[in-house]
Length: 197
Image (cartoon, rainbow, N blue to C red; front, top):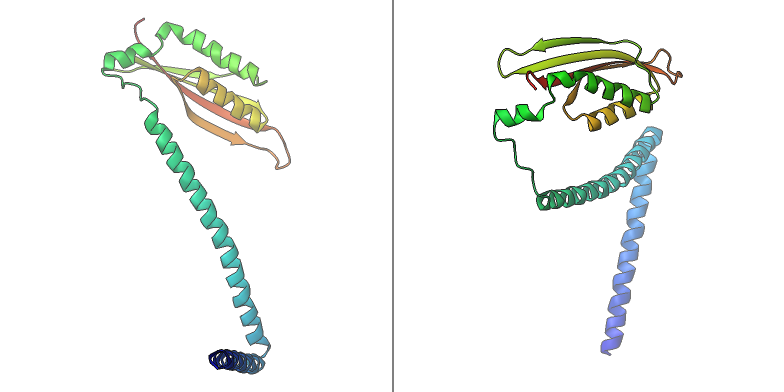
């Protein structure tokens, strides 16, 4: 009897849920018919925007979590790498700079890096100015380059790796036509040297 009662109750609940679902579908169909074409277009746009939001949100949240894990890994590895001792005095910093007499050799490194990147430096200008205090000399070197963008990028990367005391102070890249693979770049470098050897 108890099993019969449970079966009857379960069937009764299922029948009531089915009737409620059918009634809800009938009301929804009646509401959709009453909205007209513009209403249907609005409903379709709402559904499409909901699908678009969910699909992009889920992907972006996964990407954000992955980037967060990468950042945490980088922070952990950064903590485990011993840090270099900072330069204590201005004299040590000045001693780490190349001497003023080494400037021709430094320009030779610039030319060698340009040749390695298959670029030619035909002309250039440089300006030398001695700083009033501290025994520093600043050289500003500017020159044009013509080549593909990857060549120029490779040259600058290799130059900064080979000469850590050089800074790119100015970089202007222009392309004459969109389809043109060759760009013209105006590169400005700043080099600090010490006054005395």
